[in-house]
Image (cartoon, rainbow, N blue to C red; front, side, top):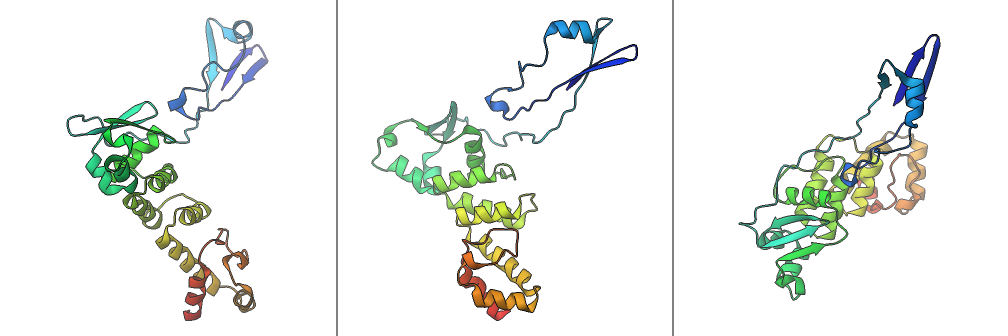
Length: 247
């Protein structure tokens, strides 16, 4: 943002910039030190007006929630995440998650409570997670890693499978390096196979000397030369080698 004042042939400019990173935690651009009001009046005020130029760049627009979890009549437990309350069904979540099955139906103190607080979870990610479990298309490039983390934390195979399908079947702007890391970190086996097929196709187009060097020297994933821009070191290379033999 800048203020501009043209006085005769002289142009005085004051520039600054700031970022609003997370609106749910407050506007971190409010009240930043730009310049004192006296300088504004003396240098930039012309006939009671100030010329201001702003360049706004939108990195992400938060989407509106597609489902609300506020129906008290059809819920039998309240999950509190940060300061937000989610009215949900014990039976439904127990069917989806071994974590919630143990929490609601096991011999835990929480099983007798009507309101349970969940720690180490942010409310926005939990909203997307619940939407996904209830059949809503809530996955985006921006939130998929948070949803996968919760799917792993709460042991919900359905949510994990939906995320894997998103990475495999839908066009995204997620880098291959990130997709590979997610496949390894969250044990997305079908996605791993996709990457191995991708490796094989690239291997087949390499020069014969390089191919032979790979076959002779590669014993584990860690031995794979850096022929791709994605980290394959943790994938099961035995499958890749068997595929290469058939190629």
